[in-house]
Length: 167
Image (cartoon, rainbow, N blue to C red; front, side, top):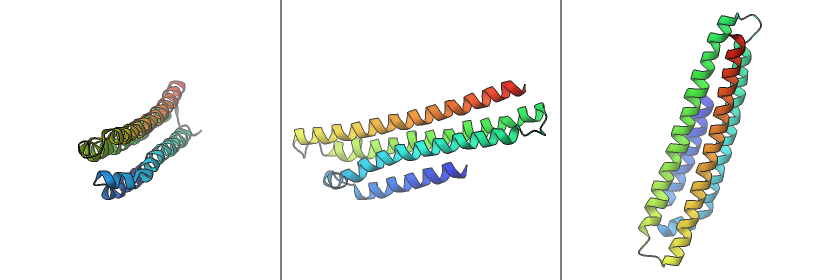
């Protein structure tokens, strides 16, 4: 789905831009506001994308159930909703945002730049920065999962109910 591809590419591009500027602990500190804003944006973009996928599902269902379609044709047509939206589109969101960008951020920041500064920064300062980073990452990743899971469940429910109705 083009909507998913564009959203994922845009978010991945923003991630790459930030990471290009964050190669050290000091650079992390200089970009901490951008990093926090990115986490917030990733959650907002995922929520918006999940809303679009819900809307696409409703539109797909309306087309599949058009008045001139037989019950068998409508039933079969609804399989496309399952395949293209429930499986493919939501799988891409999960794989590329939740498992992709967020895992990469953890590796690059928490387990990379920040872990590397452990011995060169006073422990109390380092600990506060690392804790804050982990909290942002964990909260945002959890929120992304929640948005994804709720929307995917809604689409499955729609698909299942409609197939039951036309069967």
